[in-house]
Image (cartoon, rainbow, N blue to C red; front, side, top):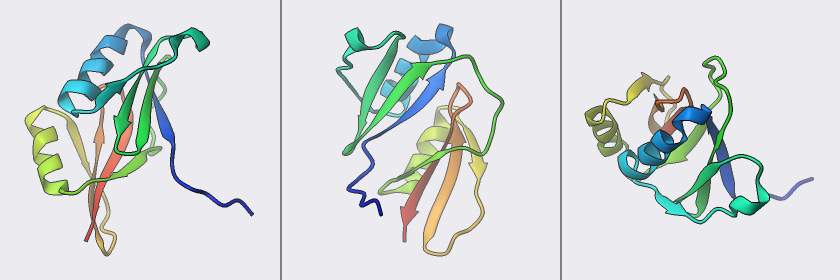
Length: 120
């Protein structure tokens, strides 16, 4: 048996020529805190961001076809998050209803799917 403590980080990929755009999207549009990344230990560029007590790691990779793979993040006000992303032209996807959760997904400019949810 494995006993888990918490999620530490998740990683999304962006095309190599769009890394700086990803830094702006996650830092300015989404509003995440850019944190230090130990670049000297990695062979490819990237950025790290704080999301509460979890980190988002952004790295480079040639794009893959869109899929249903995603990360789900709990937020305090899913309606406000939806409006904010719509106001910034982010692609929104409806999600099936799950009792006790209000949720939607979005596609970042690089094809990564993310779900935001609020526990009701």
